[in-house]
Length: 170
Image (cartoon, rainbow, N blue to C red):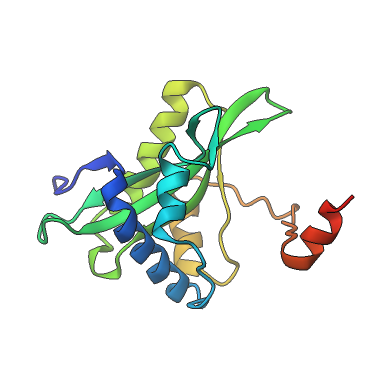
């Protein structure tokens, strides 16, 4: 089946829809009230704003337009660069990859993943990494089928809220 869609870099005008997709993802991940991000936050992170690094966007996004509903997005991937001190190379950290439920099974998730892998290969990046919730077996199955390796010996730690403020006081 030929692809019926094209992946393109996000534009500032996509930020409201990307936020809608993030909220759909949060609902799927059983955290519907966890999204604090605003359209302005996305605009500043994805495009030159106050949250930039060396006057460049701090993160990046690619989207797939919905061919049946012009002006709507079917899916997106939001990612940023990271640097490995072990490889001495950059890599991509995938924050979110999401395809609307009604568009799943058409190859969009695979195409988004392949697109980011192609960026890694083209730019000589050593790693492509992301987190998957333990209970999300459809995502686990999808990523494992593509050749990902679970890093089960590592546990993510997070500091936020008051604990972060307290530690940051010095």
